[in-house]
Length: 159
Image (cartoon, rainbow, N blue to C red; front, side):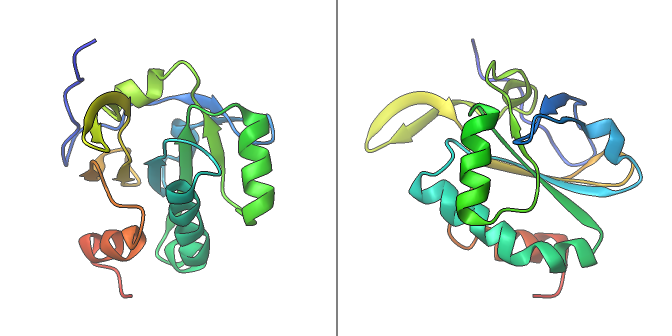
């Protein structure tokens, strides 16, 4: 499959319903009226993904204070996400997208370079979605380290 068109500021965020680490269905539509940070990570409990998830965890109270809910999405099964959430004390939903439908809707799946080789996989990506379901920020191929600080700057939030 060719890489899907990347989302841009002002686009309507594709709706979805996925299962979280506790087996609950979570729909983006249920967050209408609230702002959402939706981030895609390659694999639970790997070093980069742990760094990124813990960064969101450590900034969760301040992000919520600015009106943002945080949702993580990976191809991992709910049981693996649950172990990850428990091990790292993550208190936000980790959603399971094993068939990549949501990854592809957000263009968070495609070619990338890893260790000098071109591979197809998860593009570490983050989307800030406003309370009306529109994309505020679409950030592709983000770095795991320092990502939340960078995101806060882009959103114009105090550090």
